[in-house]
Length: 158
Ligand code: FES
Image (tube, rainbow, N blue to C red; front, top):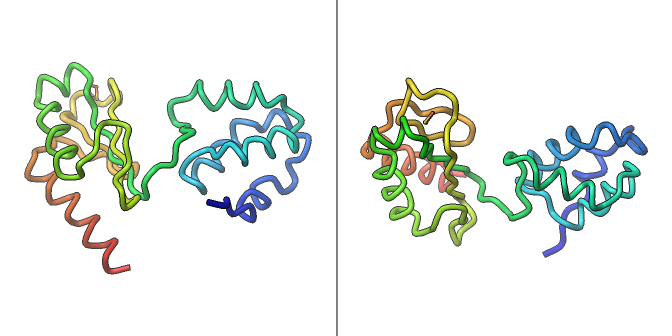
C-alpha cells in the first residue's frame, strides 16, 4: 500500500537539515500516520541529514513510537503491580477476547490496537486503561465493554 506523502511534506516544511528536530518530527509522523513507516523514515533521514541508523535507533528507543501500523483506536491496559492486583489481567482478557487479538496486535478491520504497559504512574487510580490517550480510571469489565461498544458505535456512524 502506498504511503500518502503529502502529510510528510507538511511535517518537514521548514525543518530540512534540522537534525536536532528529529524527535519532534517523529512525534508528528507518529501522530499523523499512527506509526513510523520505513519509507517515511528514509525520507526523514535524508531531509534532516541524520543517518538512517540513528533515525531507527530513536524510533526503537521510545515506546511511544511504533514501526508497525496501529489501529485507529489504541487501548493500553496497565499491567503494573498496583493495577495487576486490582484485576488488570481480567481487563486484558476481556479486551483481547472481545477484539480477538493478542497484546500488541491490531484488529483485522484496523480499528483497534491493544497494548500493555508496566505502569502509567497513576497507580492510585488503578486499575487503569487508556483509550486513545484518555485515562479511564477504576476500570471494571462492564465499563470496558461499554467503552469499546461506544467506540465501535461511533466508528459505524462516521
Ligand atoms: S501500576 Fe498501573 S498505573 Fe501504576
